[in-house]
Length: 430
Image 1 (cartoon, rainbow, N blue to C red):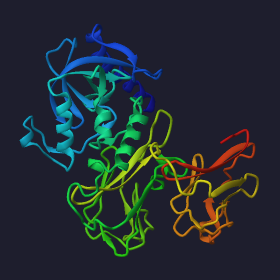
Image 2: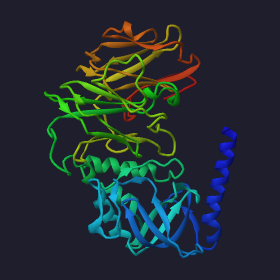
Image 3: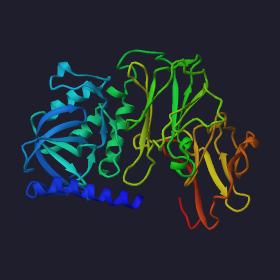
Image 4: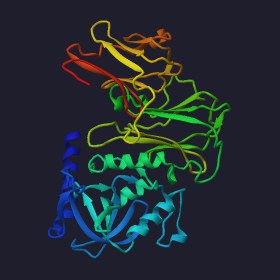
């Protein structure tokens, strides 16, 4: 079955390529995707925008495509908030907070103008729409409208595995806009409250221990209430960079000083915690892992007003520092018994909650109150049940040894993939 699906997929891609390239033999040209770089090559077309659907979708009359029908374009690398009512008349449009602003900004840049469309793979599709970058010619150069929307805080970054040339640039732009609290990243843009003053912390475990597809609940989101009173989040909703979304049920509360966890998979039969554990009930992994070609993802928490109250984008590409850098040293004992050590080499206590030990593909997350005083060393034992945990000795719970004696590495990193400390031996290097 898998072989048949691969054959069918190849046929579809070939057909899509033919649809785009054959009628436009004289209409497209090839050049570096990003001017002035030696990076990947893109195909480019010109055309005139006939209408704007929303903040990431336009219709374009493509030059030389042999038709009189406009082509629907889904802009690569960005995701705008959704419309509920689509219309060519701006006054008639309705949508989520930030949706109409993004559409208006895009419309102001491209409406009834000649644009340049770009793609690494001509047959790239998003449903029935062609996936393309969109640029307008201004001040003597082509200006990337997706980058502008990202940098101004109108849209989320949407990583693209096949159209990856701008992944790193777009994610860096989104993180910069978030740091400046621009538009989408303004936490009370859509309305003040509820509990606007409550301090929150969130981290996403995007890489499950082992294989993501067989450990769905190894992907999760933790949200911690740093305030002194409980926070009601009934009706709040969480999403990734795509459109996967979970809405918290009525009555959901994050107790003061405590953490709730949203697991990607379904509730295990033995699970009885219904107050701080929630389940997305997805059947496939949600979060893209950090990989080559600028890949990553994000997690986003919205309140009932539609305000983006909390987020975590990874990997970090803007303002990447961490208070634990230089304060923790990690080492490993790869032969039996396999152990990993984290030592506080600073003069102040450090808290490892939310930090991760990684020995790819294996992941260990430090839980709450993992505090090391100056000079203290924590020992993480690969074999053994977590029921044996003490303050300075933790058990990973693996059923087998995982460290390669001949060469391997362990990293202590943040949830956003900032390396705090790395230790390698044998044939490996950090």
